[in-house]
Image (cartoon, rainbow over all chains, first blue to last red; front, side, top):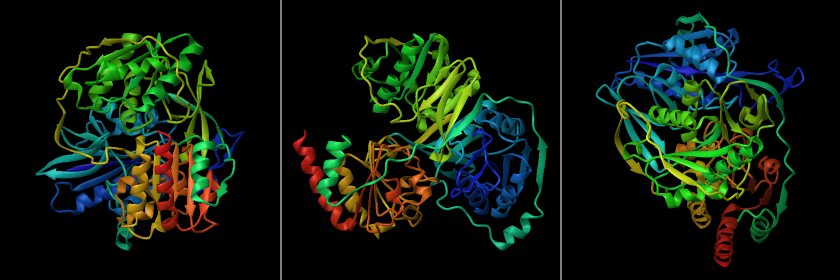
Amino acid sequence: MKVLVCMSYIPDTTTKIRFREDNTQLDDTTIQWVINPWDELALTRAVELKEDAGTPVDEVEIVMVGGVRCEPILRKGLAIGADKATRIDVEPLDAFQTATQLAAYLQGKDCGFIVCGIESGDYNEAAVGGMLAELLDYASVSSVSSVQFDGVTPIYQRDVANGKEQVKVDGPAVLIVQKGFARVPKIPNMRGIMTARSKPLDVIPAIEVDPLVEFVMYTAPPSKGGVKMLNTPEELVRSLSDEAKLI
Amino acid sequence: MSILVYIRNVGGQLKKQSLELTAYAKAMADTLNLEVTGLVIGTIADDELKKLGNYGMSRLLKADDEKYNQRVNRVYTRIVEQAVNEVDAKYILFPDNAQGKAIAPRLSVRLKAGFIPQVLDLPSSYEPFTVKKRAFTGKAIATVTAHTERVILTPMLNSFGLRENARDLEIQSFEPHIEEPNSRLELVGKQLSEEGLQLADADIVVSGGRGMRSSENFALLEELAATLGAATACSRPVADDGWRPADEHVGQTGKIIAPNIYFAIGISGAIQHVAGVSGAKCIVGINSDPEAPIFEVADYGMVGDAFQIIPELNALFKKHIHENK
């Protein structure tokens, strides 16, 4: 069974975010790009499933929409343990354009399931997975925290408002996964890094599609008023009740 | 034409966020001279739903056939789509949480409607539709426009607040036409959580970091959380070391939440952690290190030993809540 992992790349989580051209563009000159952390967890679990002889998963492919600068990110994904990487050669503009590119490539691909991290650390929309499922007309299972197998049938566990549910899906599904799917990302070892160099990294052309929304400007979030330091628990309770009126 | 609000049905109960979402829709509706219509799916009593009228909703479609009690994203998307057509909705609002985001992106594809999540404020313009949203996990605010005929929004909790605006609410049965409602997704097991309060829904969150020193010491935070009706959370190292479950991890790579009060106890306040709570109305930092970065983002801070402060706080809150009942 093949598992497809959709990945995106984001500025390293410690990077300072700056803008240029009258605050209309992200200033990417000093940015260190990393695998979106939720996608990294998704890939980690997919590779674990492949390495576990007790599951039917035997192949992991990663797919990414992006320009040439994201190739080191894909190589890292291969070093973590994916067998193959595919880059769709266009810069992502919005979730719809990204999902449409992914769907064009993934349509009809033989796979057990497709995994997307719950959101990306740049635009935080949590949209691509759901859009992809609708474009493919697949079931989407969101807030997925684990996958088990009943023979060759995957059983997905998802968080719901009042607990957890296990569901199975007839046909391929798009899983939208959160932390817990894997706990910590897998760090590539030396052997993984060496073999990653010879694994296939395909580049395919993008299709024509327009975004649905446009990012026109960026501003810094309003700065906080500054902390009010308190000396006793009594003062804290009073501040929260009388001043902030929150309790 | 109208504004459609997706009302989340949590086991027959409304959540406060649905009231807030209704108030947000009403503010848009007043500007545009439109009515606010709601849609709720699954079994829920009219008495509960009537609360929505207090916040400005005038009409509610109720798709309450039992067969819809099990959420299937693909099916729910089609039910909302039919409601959109029924009331000719130009703007469709979902809560900015897991359920809203499980359905809204699918609907966006079906309607070819611009999807704008993490919305921070009312739209600044309707021609073209322009609104501010959170980006880069709270490190920036983006101004976004959509030129599509319809627009789907998920306003963030606490972005607007509750504003009462009483209306007579008309509740109507709604029967969508869904072929094979549950054909693809089958429920094989379910466990109800004991706490019953999900982190994402909590108004108050009590969160602990490495400074709590051990898994056992989190009992102190659980007691405080029980007093306040709060959910518990933790920082990344605490979840990674297995002191707390992974789904309690708040931060850039865990859950992103926006409660009214966030108690960060024994949490240094690394940028990745703060990114998960920057939407909180009020952050309280309690740390033994006066230089801890949490105090740069906190609204209230206390330097001291959490093991002394927390039991005292718990007793004081108990007293305060008892006296203000």
